[in-house]
Image 1 (cartoon, helix red, strand yellow):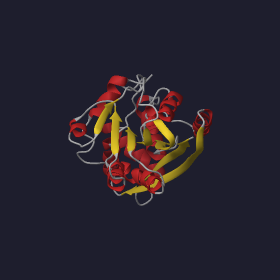
Image 2 (cartoon, rainbow, N blue to C red):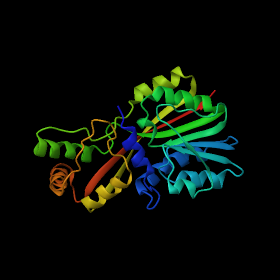
Image 3 (cartoon, rainbow, N blue to C red):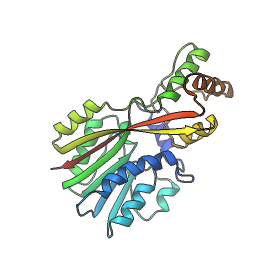
Image 4 (cartoon, rainbow, N blue to C red):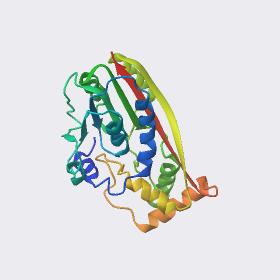
Length: 258
């Protein structure tokens, strides 16, 4: 079960003080799809605020639009922007019905405890011929780092902790989309390879994403410097080739409401 209090704390951090370039790269995948749309977009919903790039693009491209941005809590960043903020509860998601022309989300929806219910609410919130697009992490996202963390766990603790929030398998997503009668459901898998000259810089970028494991069985004690030294050692032994390579594997979900 997800630790709602901890997840809310993560979502409350000032995520835009130094916008994370990993989210920005992923946002370009969403923007490329939205840019091809040939529909009148007036009302837009963003679920989970991780970057401003997509929001700024929509604001510039579609004039006289109304954008609602939703997340688990309000931060000073939410209040500083010229948009309507909606506070949501992952266990009780509810939006206006037949209201939005476009709903999008960037690496957030996999956190919901009931993915099918979430997609049903999104379907209900869209107008006929409305478009939905979302990115979620693939099960092998950042596998180099995760595998290295499990090696470090075994070395230090003689057992491995859960280090990544679970995500949704592609087959299950497609089945849900079809059951909910979405039109032309599509899932495109993409891999973003990022090369780092510094291991600490890689960890810093990931830390800024605020994607820590958020379930109630989370390890309660923060890791010490010794752990991160071992983590870098195992990463270097298994994946280092002139640089630290990190694969950000994502699945891009898109479909229409009939």
